[in-house]
Image: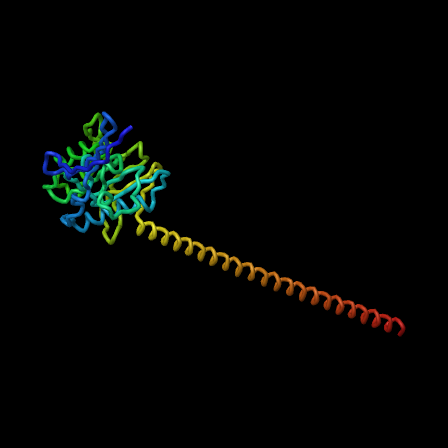
Length: 308
């Protein structure tokens, strides 16, 4: 069978967003096989535009750090903050504050353009969770961003609005059903938080201290209801636990020392009692000897008197 040499062509889609693609054509007789690969090098993967508040930066760090530090799961995953997601084909990216994708891993060469962001065509699937932290009224979290995540096939979309910019309550979530987002029951979120049953992972708000901020945070929790802690929180908790154990050990040692002192005092008292009893016995013995001697002297005196 005759095979023609591999030919290369560069073409563009008929829009202003999709990067150029390379079409690899290989002719086998009457058949043509084409493989399309996107020109990732033409994509803008970093633009240095995001400007976040200190709280938003801390919140994003807390969510990603806590998963890698405390989540015990037998599946690999990727959790990122402020990293762009490109659809298939890769057009204009959307940049969630945080996303979580299961059963994927980073490429060995993270410096290649196609590995610098989350390309759905490269990873073969969209992330499971996208999270937006609302910091103003113009972020379009309830409108265009919701529609975009929906179109990308991201199963769960979470909106955290701590200051009440676009919602009356802080936490809201949506689940993809038949290609459309359906809101989680509001009352259930207020009572129990959000539960992603297929991930065995949940989210809720909880007041606590992180990175010198003592405020309400959006946190993860596992199937046992245990809050997933970030590295700093876990280290602090371990330090507090170790200090508590040390204090308990010190208290136990002090208690044991007091018990030893009490036992020593009891032993001394018993020894003193024994000595006192011994002295009493000696005194009684001396008294008995003295009485015996007195009897003997009395007997002698009587004998003398009888002789006279």
